[in-house]
Amino acid sequence: MLSRAGEKFGYKQISELKSELTKLGRELCWALEKQTGVKVFYYLHRYYGTSPKNEPQRRCPGCGKQWLEQDSEVFKLICDKCRLISTVAQDFQKA
Image 1 (cartoon, rainbow, N blue to C red):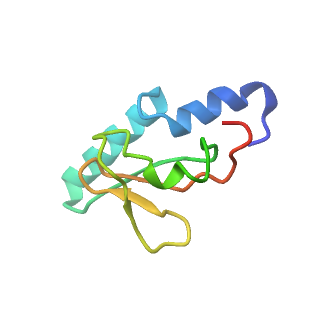
Image 2 (cartoon, rainbow, N blue to C red):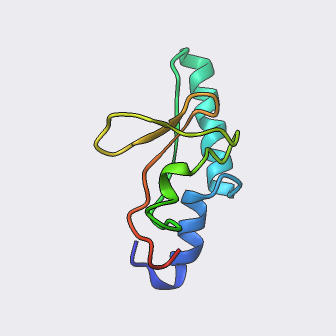
């Protein structure tokens, strides 16, 4: 994001399940799904990880179950129960 002063705040808002932005986004997803009858997933950003070794063992922050891996260029991880999608971490230096 390269926002410097707001970087940490912004990253937390787009990557943490309990952030205000995520809460609002998920509410909108549920409302849209209810109106359309089509599954709507919320994207949780993931850039920083603890280590390349630990990343595949990462669990869904909503239900604690193992993420399902999907064949996608961008959204590699999905939890159908929680309606969340995410990516695999790209940087392990600043975690």
